[in-house]
Amino acid sequence: MRLPMIALMAAVSLAASFTIAAAGPLPGSSGGGAALIRQTGCGSCHVIPGIPGAQGLAGPPLDHMVHRIYIAGMLRNTPENMTHWIMHPQSVVRGNAMPEMGLTESQAKDIAAYLALLD
Image 1 (cartoon, rainbow, N blue to C red):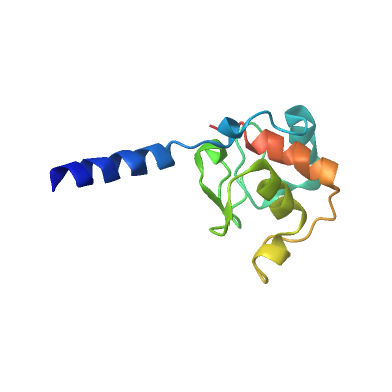
Image 2: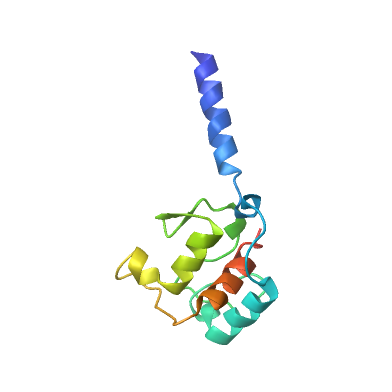
């Protein structure tokens, strides 16, 4: 009985240690993402490490994004899903507080690349 429990605990530990960076090279430019985060005002709703003045409390803090398994509790944390969420959050969870910002795919990839570095 103890062996299955140990195996289950090991599996949970392994799953919890998954990081978005383990998925391979990230599309987008993290430097460009930081600039876009500042320009678009993401910090008015989120606390974002490395972004001066990003102390908003309307949305969740975006620290430790590299270790999160899900985005918005719905999407697996992958670069593609993060890009989709950033571009079209209302298509994932209709009525959520995150607005459609009108970002291009390239811009969303840059922001996703920055967020993926937040350890």
